[in-house]
Length: 447
Image (cartoon, rainbow, N blue to C red; front, side, top):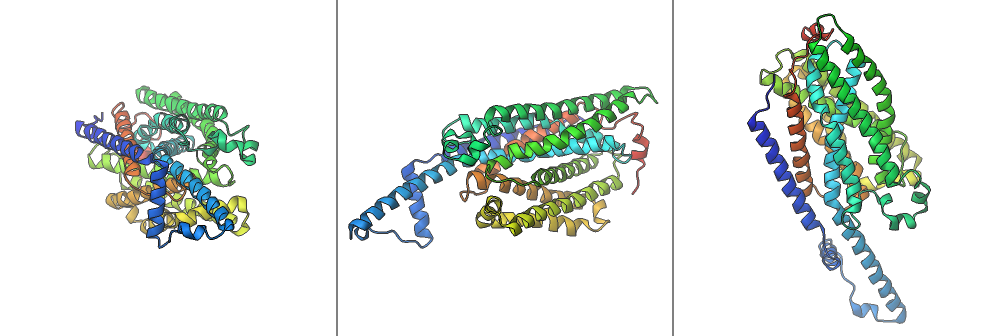
């Protein structure tokens, strides 16, 4: 039986505390008065080489007086927009990190169900690792919803989703036409269905897995139950994951849509989830807690990371190329914003999520080296965090983004919570499954 060490608990709690402090600092510094914002904009304009127009220039004629009035009005309006963007930054930073870690748990849950439904023979020795990671799905999903809705009700103009702002909806006919779907009540109802279905499957899959350990040799009733619910869950997951991606991510840009978006989000979450499975398995094996896991298991996990990285890149390019080539204003605006203000991150994540794992993990021997896979995993996780960052931030803070204290604090907060929940779950059951009909095949697996 694995026992979570006090050192690991302390480390997780320290991360959470540091994260809370970072997030609190973000909230304290994000709310600026209109005058402070105007001063900041003037300083930015001067730094960029701009020049202020003097009052004397505006008073040369009655026509220029009108122009000056319009300029002042425009400047005030711009300052108000920037003020709202700055206020949304800590909310958006928390939402990005909350989504990222929830995606890891949900991606592992789907991968776990695939292993059971396909009656995979190589992976049962990793089931306890997968079950521990999926323990984060329920609390992680609830946190995402609390942030999404809480950003609307706490403070003013803080909402992550603009369709929650009645003032914006009142003047936007396109959002009004979608209001039957994009409203808080329907949003919460769908979220309850998603989270309830995912959590129920995780509960019963874990229950049947533990029950199979206690069953007599040859009694596979719990294994068969796990198989049946896994097959049903995968159908449920295919639908709910797509709708979730529309609700929780794509609707931050309510004027934009993509028919590939659900698959794109799925590819990101499953490669992140498999990466964490590999990293956690390597960590536990290094502590002599998973002696049944061999280099062939690590090789197969790395192979999945390699394969799904290519799948992610295929979807990234397909979505980008089709929309860019068609050049339909309602669609291409998504990429225009990201290329204009997030060029380094937008194209940088392509290197981190595709080029790097493709070159590093192409060699079969590299996939069998634990430290090599661990290093590649760190880079892949950074790349997919940036992927989620680029999905959310352009719609909420536009060009007012920066990876600073609020963003790092949010990563520490939810990263610490994720570690605490996962390792606590690991301690609740033996790390080696028993009586699984494929356990011997898994223990003796050789690539």
